[in-house]
Length: 384
Image (cartoon, rainbow, N blue to C red):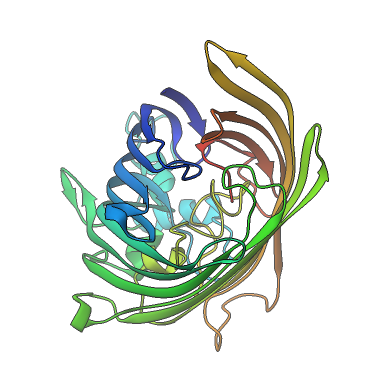
């Protein structure tokens, strides 16, 4: 499927997704999926990946998820840490003036505007690899799985022609050399999955708990550890049309000294940035609220209203109303913001499910905490 999208954080994007599905032995929703992603945006974000999702891999009772990914950006947001960062354009202008730049529209050079535009941005290149194996201890109902895995990434601050962060940027103030290094994070956890369907569950629940850690012994530049817990519930309101209330709670706590990119991410089977962005915190710019303490909720009222078969393809069209909310603190002992300040977003979504395995969502969201306008996202897969 070729893609032509607009994402508030990444700009206009183009690329494509190729998915091959292998159906065998009645394994649902598929036996194997091999997916190729290519993406480049007008804000010079690149995200290319090869992913294999295999059920009963090599005849074993479990599931293997493996991904190789190349990610590069010159426009990732960084406004500081804690729950009170505001990404104030006035701070950018003041920093430009402090560096001797003048806001003079009569001058031909745009040094002031360029500095101000980049002040709250990061640039880096980050090849990544993820390997997760979920050993089935028992099958459904109440499928119980042992999760073991590893997530690694190599961060190079800069772009192909310039090393380091943007000079004078908010990120460079905190990390003058950027954060070059290797993140190597083993993961262990337990999953209980009782959903009736994976792509569009109508009833049941999904729970997950995991621990992760990084140290010089694992090859990691940044020593830290984290715990993560997830519980999601699905409640059918109507069978025809299919209407379901879905809600998910996520708790994630980190101790130690993670890099900014590890600080932004969640453990376990999730590799999402939070809070803010297309995955969790829709309507708030990606990477805005960073903290070691994250308590989040996502609730969606989903309805698949129209099912058609065209050219032997099963297409299901629907809509959703949703809200994301969170409590974010930099550290348990030092919140760096207002204690227990709630953050919230709300939005509407158009959903397409193709052949009961491939889901696409188009989300429009807004938040009273984000002055940079509503967020618009076209994303493969359900939020959860």
